[in-house]
Length: 124
Image (cartoon, rainbow, N blue to C red; front, side):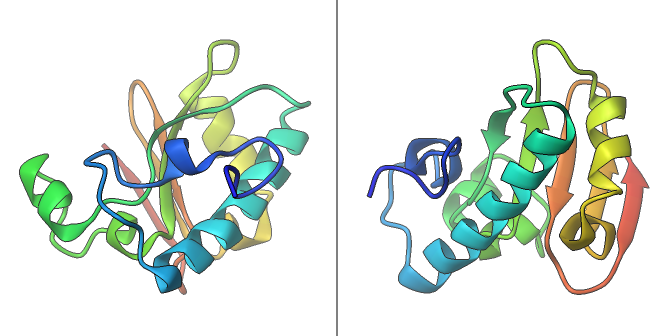
């Protein structure tokens, strides 16, 4: 398997350190990818770049990620797009049930989305 979904690859969503993705994390990433597909569709098919998906605990610590980061469970992605602003990505993420009920973080250059249980919103 080289993709988690039609438009989101293992290379994009797996940890950037190159470690093996545990099976239970891969399952979460597949669920996340389906939500990302819905977001991409909602945005009119605009390609979305995944800046960060799964992070193993060591990589998360190395880059200064939050100690309880949703990235470490394979439930989060930081997104950007060449033709869509982070604000627009966040606005449309609010219309995707798994993100509406999960986390959406608004940053200057990217948008964080996650499929956690329980809504969370913040500006970075």
